[in-house]
Image (cartoon, rainbow, N blue to C red; front, side):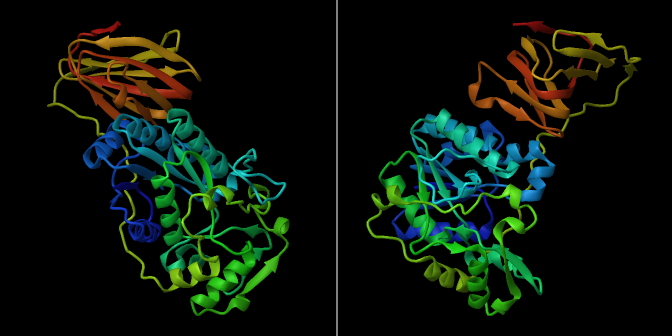
Length: 402
């Protein structure tokens, strides 16, 4: 059994067919919040798979540049949670990554070549690789070039205009079905580390790949206008000819993968699995008790070793405190003994550690909350400057050093 965690429907359906063709039973999980260690653990515990394949990614190049924190949240942090769950339940953690982690000097690249990512998107993908392999020494990272999804969804979207510019940089495509076959072979062999996966045949330029996709989809290939690779917008964010050596994969496969052109033709004719877009998880809502008289304090921040503490409200039913954490600072190990508390992040990113419940550590970003029962030890640290609202019931302040 292999558990495939999240991703878009078109890519998942192709992957699943490839895995199943090699005799793998497949469970697809589209709903788990991958930034919650507790929820990832629960999903893995329910299935008890042989391997967990993490495919989720935010591949918006411009979006990642504009929101670096979100890029690392979406592309890097889930790898920690998947690796931890895989270690606990004795399964192989597998991360789907990208050839774009390489730099500007040009491929083909082998697994031994040092990555030199040029964009926030590529840096966040590389960080995910590092997280997975550090947390699980036996983990597997599968790097690919462009994935040819059912219906050629990505390429079809790029062909929507009358004239489409594409560069002459070479890439190593992989059909989604062939990617599933390759992952199945690697899981069966209990491969670890980094493995490059691509279809057979010579690498192809991005322009020629788009032209081939246009022909397969019944569109005019002449709408694709070739351009020198480094002359297009965002060329500084893309690696130069990120083609891949696949010698390590060849040693594992029972038979070579077909040429990319055959994979493209099949993908163009495959029906697209329509699934709703995954929800953007915002964490647990703040829980409010019945209405009660609340004393609102005039803000007078108190300096602390980690930043400032500001009591906002104190009442029989509701209390509120605003904590400001300076970049890299930490609230020392503490616990509270009476009421449950809700931690809600207003700004920045916070790591909330629960030493006695390792599987329930949380990485909280703006808009995320976690509510914890009493008698729980916690430590809170900031990734960059952060502001956290803490809410609890009862006027007594029973937060003490642990």
